[in-house]
Length: 367
Image (cartoon, rainbow, N blue to C red; front, side):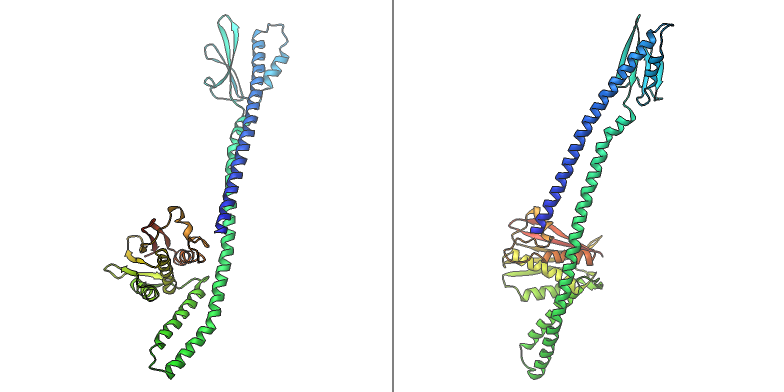
């Protein structure tokens, strides 16, 4: 929970920084664009005055300075129209600017005038869109930063997860081998003892657990497996280790359903879902396991009559460390998600949940 909260805080901080940078960029660019527009407006007013002076000059007037002012405009698109809409002069454009929002009228007298229509310069237009380019860059930076943060943490978790699993399997190997040998000795010494078969089952169970841990971190061998057999083994194991107040029902349909799974790992997934359901029901209620072959997948649903999950936590329940129980590490559902999605290329999620009524977990596997 602490790491999850820390990740959320970092995400929020990065998003806030991106928003602040974007706002600052937009504000600064707004003032720059406004100042440049005013400057271009002043330049065009001077240019229009020069145009008026040129039109009013007589044959003896020195128009050298006026022409220098008119020819100095090399950036702002401008077209001069007379009262009849005929183009008298144009610079820096080949377009029609009669509908431009920027226009300066020069009155020549005798019901004659000139309209100096101009548009924003190329530099001004580029500066106007620059904040949005910056905004995209900042957003990309935030996305990359969050992705890098999550990837590094996930890689670290994977190393710890795999290391602990391999070490657990290794540590269990020697005592399990010793227990298996002692069970064989006891069978020969006390062949009629009724407890030995149960001891043998428990030792084999330990061997299965060690095998499961050893498979974490390596690609499991997927084989076409009868799902009814997998579910039956889970129900038999869970049923013997829970109270009579919990009933486990199965709905396997009328046809044989097979899927490519690693049986030891997939049984582990169903066991975790069932144990999670038993905890949610406080040891009293019913669990229903449904298997169906659908058009696009093979589905396995585990439904319980427990306390339910708040809809805001549907995704959080699969996060390592997340738990609503006073005891526990919050790793069961995280492990189930890893096995289903990384090893079996399937999908597991909370299909539905109602507080006080129960929850349905759904697994989808490739047919």
